[in-house]
Length: 283
Image (tube, rainbow, N blue to C red):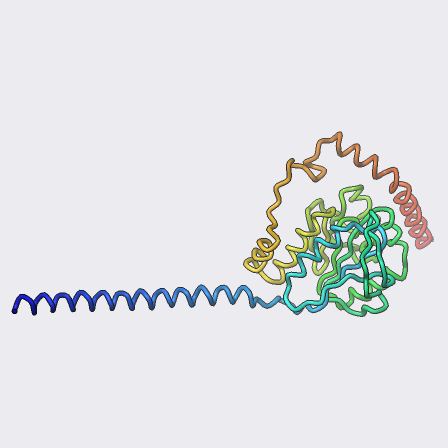
């Protein structure tokens, strides 16, 4: 009997210790789970460093699709924002290959934007640099915008407004330094460049990197990583190319000549116009 009592005693001691350990383990697990949940919610509920409510992507006939859609996709990951296309006139707007997109807001309708994105193209983009109504609208939007940005040759349009004068900027690789000098900007051969609220990117795909840079500036590292994972943005191109520095020289020469056929006459004409304007000011 005495042995049985001792056995039961030890059984109760062991059981008690096990239960206490289980309770402690459960409490620790709950605490860890709560901490994990709090960390998840902190990322999800991250507030931007400045309020962003409206994002407009300016499009026009001849714009490059990914210049507009890339930043649109990335910046759409911001919560509670109104992101939309805007054109000089509402209606159907065609990209370089004739793909039509319905645009429901005209520049006359849009008086304010927190973020403005200006995509590029080719000859049609250069024509935008001559459109006084468009340039004046960009200047008006810029007065209250938090971020004024361009993608690829969209930097020509932004440059033509005079807003990049004295600023560090980048643009599409094609005669990039000549174009930026034309508009008084300091060309930087980078994937994207920030100078104050002005963000400019190199060609086409670089617009997504710029948009992710803006996301990081607004929301921080963890939120931006979440956006990248949502997009599964983990590029793996077949060649280590895609920039002037990385591409074989013969390929660069081929592309340069191809672009020159359509664009160099326009560039030279614009240079002459700028030179004449400068001469008239000094006389």
